[in-house]
Image (cartoon, rainbow, N blue to C red):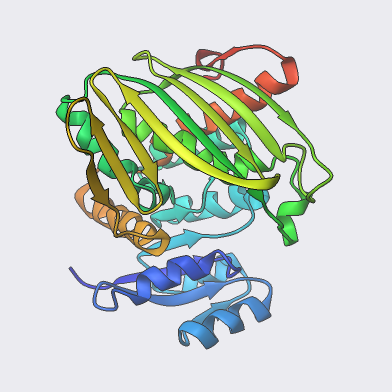
Length: 327
């Protein structure tokens, strides 16, 4: 396969993980263009990763740059006016997550991509950088029986700056969306109901939700309990999955497979965020050549936005929300 020619729309900090992933595979991909109205962002990226074409206007990049794939790293609040022109120009695009702030914009982008036949994917790199992919393979074998209950706690103190501080939606939009996607992909199942409560703590600056607790039920019967905080003075992390005949303990470095009457089995995860991002970039390009949907297509990832929207609706309306309400 020839090198994938990549153009970035947005050259802020999040681009660094993509650039690191691409730099590890110089024979398979190269960056040929940046587009950002802030010249200092482009200058910083070029100083670290090398010179390429620079544009301050998206229309100029679309018309002049020779790119195979675009990576959209803009704030989510302007994602729609960025992604729709790329779809119109027939450019396969990898969006940072979440690919929109709300379900209505997500549905509009998904419909545009589907009708134009242009693959648009979402950088859900936690599928690889967290060992969801290993758990998925283990569960698919069926030896642990039916997955019953996932319990996850991700508490810590986070300090953001820039555009994120102007966003109303915070912890779930920034991080919980990764876990929602990971549960769906690991279980190969879709959520059925969501119940969520949250708080806004003065301990950190951010949106309305600085900490949340959510309970999800899946169509296959699995129940998920997620607690996540950007405003906790105690750093606590853990994720367990209980099945009928055993269980899994997951963390960033890998997972432990536990079965009754047997020694635990350790599975190491050698992949990090740049690896996970590059895997999805390459899959997007292959999908565009093979005429198929990419692994993390917007048609798939709209189900993550549906969970996100349902969780915020549940919190605001103080009730259980069924995912079928968001169609």
